Length: 256
Image (cartoon, one colour):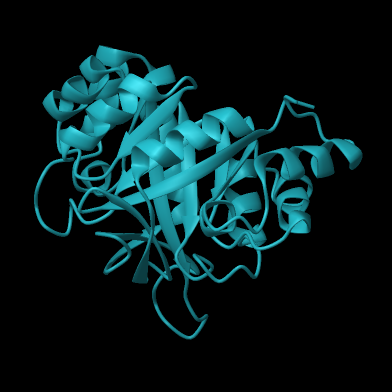
């Protein structure tokens, strides 16, 4: 089995780390630089930063906090939110960001994924997919891609989109369930497994972690290659070391 990565996610709004439920009702968590330094000390494998209001506000990622984080962080980190083109990606990579994450812009212009992969390498490119479940009674896909921080329907099937971004050159997929986000009731295992079984690139499970068992389920049932969480780490409910210790005890390969 591949080594499973534990990844704290830091949603950034107005230069502060925040966390909400179902992408709304945000509350302040901490300073992004302070948080990144703490997670480096605690043994996180990677970090993901998302400027969560950039796309909604029709702007690029704010580079001020990214620069400050890059000066302090000692592990690989990705940044997403408001990335509209390869120029935005280059600006982030030039600051020291290891991976750029695109979501809405990729749905709007799929060729951006191919262009970015060719220009920067697939190892530096994450495609984030936000998905939700629809009722069988609607004409929409059961698992549907949503964009603009989950506020806009696309009518695109999550699994079909995952297959396409892999073909276009994505290095990995960050898959978030809008329905599960912030609920602490567990990852959407149906969605995670469906995507993991459809592609060969790594899948980061996101949205819904609330207890240690959820990490194990995401890997064993959902077939994820990495697990991402936010509030349970930010507010000290579960530690990075505790999560790794638990997974190792369950026979999951992790970096201790």
